[in-house]
Length: 125
Image (cartoon, rainbow, N blue to C red):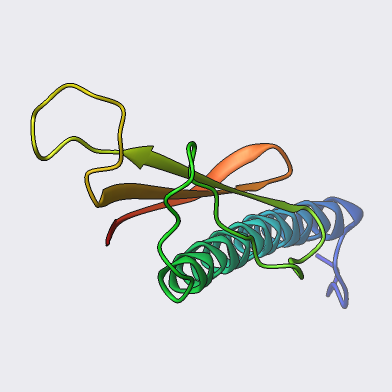
């Protein structure tokens, strides 16, 4: 028998195939991790934007017009949209559409057309 001093072609191909599969798995994991990070960042930004808008509404004077509307934050990041809905509540139970001094404020933030965050609170006269 001869003394072999190197690897055969088959051994090299098997090694390269194993390294390729390991590299593909690592790159797939990095891609998934990156996508999850971007999604989490967008959702956190949307939640902070919704809470900021709610604080902005709370600091505005109580609006008695019908339907009551409150100003929106003027500068929002690209890709986000903001809506603020006011619902008159009827704590007196008289069934009328007049303002009894209690409003439900709903702030919704969408990111690229998908609802990302919603915050609800009440404003009292």
